[in-house]
Length: 135
Length: 135
DNA sequence: CCTTGACCTTCCAGTAACTGGAAACACTAG
DNA sequence: CTAGTGTTTCCAGTTACTGGAAGGTCAAGG
Image 1 (cartoon, chains in turn orange, blue, purple, brown):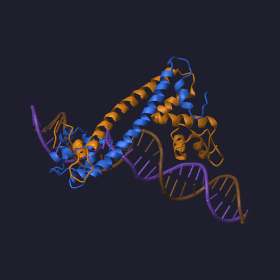
Image 2: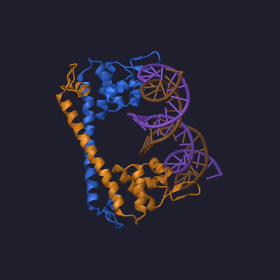
Image 3: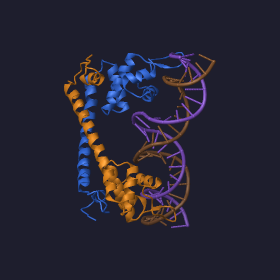
Image 4: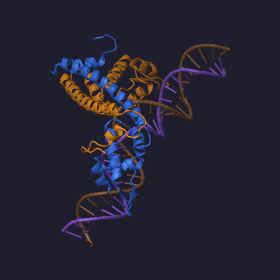
């Protein structure tokens, strides 16, 4: 399989597959006489695996860890669980931040009449928030 | 005020204040004889404004827009509202994504016994998900 | 056999928003 | 006067790609 076929199968851009190959995350198992990367089904599975893991927010380095685990079935699933649980905490934290962000901004937007008067609660809200100061 | 004083007052790292100065987002209003950046209270207010806006997820370029609006009180608040509302949509979208991510990963983590057996539902869950395939 | 167009290669540069570090100059306390 | 801290500029690195240029390869059509 050439790079565009494998990229299509894995749901990744060609550039990204090449990049993963360059950084040694998912190298091409072989090269054609002309130097074309040639991939097999195992590589496709790995690329899908990486794509999914990236969608879950795992960094490329974490993907590398995960991929090592994935490659070596003798490793315990506790390692994987540890990594995943850490990610889960981070996601939950991010969600909380995003929620308060959303609430605050929504409040500001609602307070804003959006007309052509020059004073704007959004601007004011962004500016204040240090003490209880109100300009 | 020297850069570290203003950075402290604005709640930003010195490096970041210098960076904002370099890119012209919040330039230092003056320089000392020795070339030290010297800031005034207005600059501190702008830096706080930017920090807050950044915390809200506005990009630096959006901060620049917002800052222009903030500087020029003659602009309508509708402009600000438009920018903020767009951001709000993006935040909501990101929240939805994060939620499904969280749910999926949590499900995987829960299914994983975390013991030393080599098969791991997290790995399996990351790997599959294309068709209804189950290895 | 030749050309055309799609596909492949490598390498270089750029993105966002900083962060870290080096070399050198400035300021302050003792 | 000296030590220590603060400041300057500039350069490089970070993350995970993405875009583009210059050039080699392959399959089909005429």
